[in-house]
Image (tube, rainbow, N blue to C red):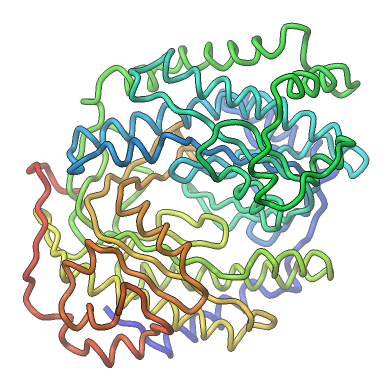
Length: 526
């Protein structure tokens, strides 16, 4: 496994040719678009009993400019659940997956009722979008609707732990809300859709959702739409939650709107409707009824052969592996400028090339498995070993080589694509035992999931890096060879591209394994 300049250049040029900016069809999310989607959703619901989303599926060569409200939900006590895993036992990971499955199901039961778009789940976070009613003149109505949904989400999630599970499944909830223009694309395919909203509102809502205090926190843009005075800086906006009486006022104001669909018994009716749907979900009941429903096996490397569509609670992977995150630094400002200057076609074309190449480096060059893209960030998994055990040292070495390849491919994209020279790539990685499965609603809307301390640490390391840095976690560093360790003074390396890694490690990566992790079970291989 190795990275090649020629192979990377060839992939980038071919992808550029397949998706040039000139063929990107930029649409507006308006009433005409929505009518078409409603017909598709109604037909799908009749045929399968499963509804759809108001925007997706967007075709690979489309981009949809939306005026919408972005709602970001944070499960505050997720990190306590992660820390409660202790030695990361099977039982601990089962409880963590129960926690996630319950709350993913709870949020889906609410989002569907508001004709909102669930974009993605990642760990403790949900991103959803309220795009209706359409049009710039209807922004206040969208905001009222989004706040009503946020209030219902908070009540349902906080009540779900008490109603459906043990005390360990309970969580407090923090929600961030922002409004504005974004570009919707979907670069996934088949059972692995990759929805993405490009622009500042999603990023800002996520920042408002960060924190340990529960509540609903809105941006000054939302306040302006509601005719309220601004609070000030982001830090100040993150410290002032919306009072309960205000939420009730917004909810009833929306109910009286000609476009509203609420009755006088809200908010309790919407909450109870969500609970009723959850109680009728046999899969959810079975999952919460016993931790034993989660059955684990070790996947035989390489991880690129993992098929997420075959995974479910009763057929889940759990094994030591390296989690790696690579995030495009400076991308939100880049998107805002593209929207402002009417260069959405070039933006989408560039992003498709970059995301495709990063995924190819992970899978084709280093036999890794992409879990998903989270916005402009790719999350991948890497492991070396056998059907019985993971070779920690070799896994870390391959992950470091992969990180170098990701940076070299990104720099090659910068050389071959227009307008992205100011962007960077921040990378973080960590080693640890990690369960991998699918959760939530079955089918194409189920959630590809990899959740563990290693995943949380690697993402945290990436978020602390600038666009030229690569960081490695303590466990990965402890398992690494001396050559690998020397690349990361203080756990962080600057400008670590493939050439630097290859010169430093040479053939040392193929040295005999020294550190080996074995799972606590001897299950069948997949």
